[in-house]
Length: 421
Ligand code: IMP
Image 1: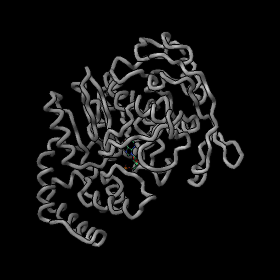
Image 2: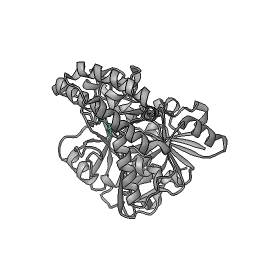
Image 3: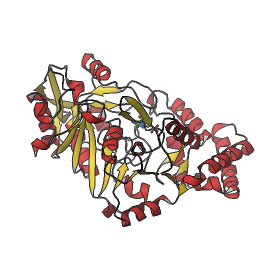
Image 4: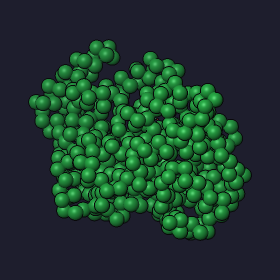
């Protein structure tokens, strides 16, 4: 069984802990897009692990962890993350990195900073990790790939071309020799982990192994299907698995969407159900809604059913996992957005034009809150009735079953809704 886990909102849905849970039963975990813009948090026995590049499934001993071709990575970041895991007693021997993954270079970060400055108030609000320019170079066919770090002549040629180009773009250059030596050193340190990841994944599939494809960011941040241009630069929706890991669509058995019990977004861009007052602050505080990568406060809002239906369609979701239900515990009333109003007209599905998103007003359905601590609940049946109704309503709106939900960050706080079936 090969499973894809994707974020069904704007990222930060709690995929890290979901992947950690599912990885237990799998043989391999694969990251297929994004880079160190992602921040997956997992808490094990009260100990917090934040992953940016390495699949969080690595916390389970013996699992194969693969960073596939669709990822862009900064070698220094990767080596740092590997070292941190080692010092905390987590083995990284089973980690593999695709030779075709692209390298984020120092000039990518500099260019991104320049571009954000030029955009000014219209900035994207990126994580500043150089992700966009790294993917732009990949598409423009001048990107440096991880495999190039092992081939001095090829690397030299590519670095030279890029430095000439970036000198024109940035008005300054980097020491070519220093950069080359640094990259070759990274290559030496990473050599034993570098591989043909598509072939490795293919062999695992042939052997009947179970693979988990770990999505980063979320559907609404997808470069094609998200709220462009306020998106990340990769295909974060489920379709990204095929190109990002080199597997055919038929290899995927199941697509799971992770969705938070409310909505958050970091960075700029449209967010119809955003709450700026007291409730927004409460969600931020109760949910510790601060970016795992940048520490920025996340924008918070009510659950958006229009977005959920969109995520179900774009990803072909088979099921949902609902996270952070407990964050709503203190609220008297909870609201779910079921449609948007645009110029007096009701819109049921997510509009695909930027100008429309800005003008869409959410139409809410109000439900009773539960005003009870759910974090101690040990099963669905012990949840207060309004909380059960909330889960059921989300299922109805998305026309997709919720099999698991969480009421706290610990591994054991992920509960099943089996009684719903
Ligand atoms: P970039 O991926 O750094 O280029 O940022 C583009 C947009 O995606 C910005 O709004 C970021 O805040 C957002 N973004 C990137 N990675 C994540 C993530 O892991 N979680 C949530 N938002 C993200």
